[in-house]
Structures are given as C-alpha cells and as structure tokens.
Length: 289
Ligand SMILES: Nc1ncnc2c1ncn2[C@@H]1O[C@H](COP(=O)(O)OP(=O)(O)OP(=O)(O)O)[C@@H](O)[C@H]1O
Image 1 (spheres, helix red, strand yellow):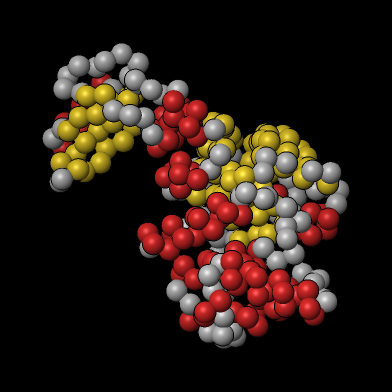
Image 2 (tube, rainbow, N blue to C red):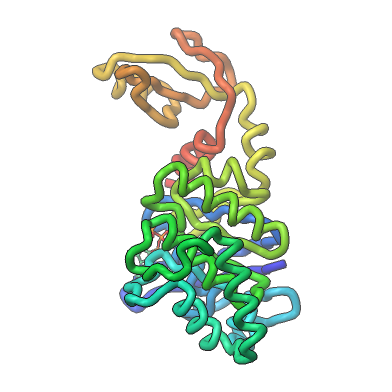
C-alpha cells in the first residue's frame, strides 16, 4: 500500500503543482487522470523521490519515503514520460547494463532476470536489435522491462500509451494489468478509456488537487440515469451550452452529438445513455473550474 498524506509542492516560479494531495493506493492498477498541467507528472516525480514536496508524507508499506529515499528507490520501477535518447546497443545489453546500475551484481541472477523480463515484455525475439531501431510500442515495453528490474513493489508509468497504435496500446496495457496483480502500479494518462478498462481504482486531479477518487465502476454507476445525448446542428452548440450542462460534443457520422448531465429527463429530443468514466471526468473538471 502506498499512502500519500497532504502533499504540497510549489515550484520556484510560484506554480502550485500539488495542493494537499492525500491518497491511499493499494496493490493493483491505479489510474491518475487529469488535463495537461494538472500536476500528474509533478506528483509522480515526488513519489519517485526525484523531487521533495514542501510538506506532507509518503509511505510505501513500512518505508517513510521522505526520510528513506534510497530504500524507496530500491522498491521503485519508474517509466518516465520521456525515456530519453536510446543508445545504439541491443535491448539485451542495455537491460543488462541497467540491471548492474540497479545493483544486481550476481551474474547468474542478473542473466536470469534480464531474460525473464525480455520474455515477459515480448521482446525476446528482438533482444539483439538496437533499442533505437525499436517502434514506439517496443520502446515502451522495453521501458517497462527496465522498470521491473529488481522486482519493485511500486511501478510508476507516466503517460505510457501516448503515441502507441491501438494494437501496441492493448498489448502494453495487458502487460501492465498482469504486473498490477502483484504490485502497486500507478498509471498516469489522459486516456480515460485506459482507466475504465483496466484500473481498479483511480483519481482525477485538476490544478494540483484531487477532485475525485475511488473505483471507476462505482463512480460510473453513480451517474446512472443522468446522462443524455442528442445530435444537434453545429450552429446550436452555443445555445445548448447555455441551457444545459454539456459534458462533451463529438462528431458521429459527421454530425455533432452532445452529451449532457441532468438528473431529470431534459426532453427536447434528448435520449438517455449509459454513463461513462469520461462523463464523470468532464463533469468533475467543470466543477473544479
Ligand atoms: N520544474 C518545474 N518548474 C516550474 N514549473 C513546473 C515544473 N514542472 C512542472 N511545472 C508546472 O507545474 C504544473 C503541473 O505540471 P505537470 O507537468 O506536473 O502536469 P501534468 O499533469 O503532468 O501535465 P501533462 O499531462 O501536460 O504532462 C504546470 O503548470 C507546469 O507548467
């Protein structure tokens, strides 16, 4: 269990990146949702001991993370948003190198671990290819392989599916789901569907604050019978936005469809529709403005 209590972080330029964030994150996949600039990466970096909060506490099981950052780093696998430049060496060599950096010095143990991770991330067949020649999806899977070195108890993945094609995205998410059976995995993302499909728990953050948290399916069920949709003409959008709580507007077959939140049937051509986590996301962000 990862426990965050009252985390505050203000950068030197005065930006309040996290404001009083408290969360309890058990084993399993935890989705962290929020718009650009909400503070997701700041929170991840703080948990990963790459920066200190101004106040608050972080505990991973028995570890007081702020007091014992090295103990935390031994338990942590981190896949940052931008993994950086890949040298022209093979995945096998690079992973072996990372394993040495992680302190896995016993040769036999290291070889076993590196080979098992290349198998687990489906990179075994291409292990001798240079990582810089990998596709985006393969690189992300390599990123997870390096994050899993040393059998961490906490894995942090910062927007890992950005830019992946649907096939690679599925493959990557299935891999994360399998990892989440054993350890705490925090998945930061803009992609709401990733959280709906995969995460047992989630939090939405906006302007540095937690504005919603809990189990996605419970949160979605709470919106039952309050989401309505209809098609409109483009020119009517402003008018509908004045009159209704419009959550989203999207083209379907070239025609704008809007989804609104209303606890009573709005009439006016609206039909009821099943709620989604995206509805909750937009509703929560409206409330947080
Ligand atoms: N090192 C820094 N110094 C100053 N301000 C920063 C720094 N890092 C982030 N910020 C600011 O803090 C706020 C939160 O940024 P952060 O990157 O944590 O958000 P995010 O939710 O991860 O966004 P994105 O989804 O775009 O990556 C933003 O206003 C950002 O400009």
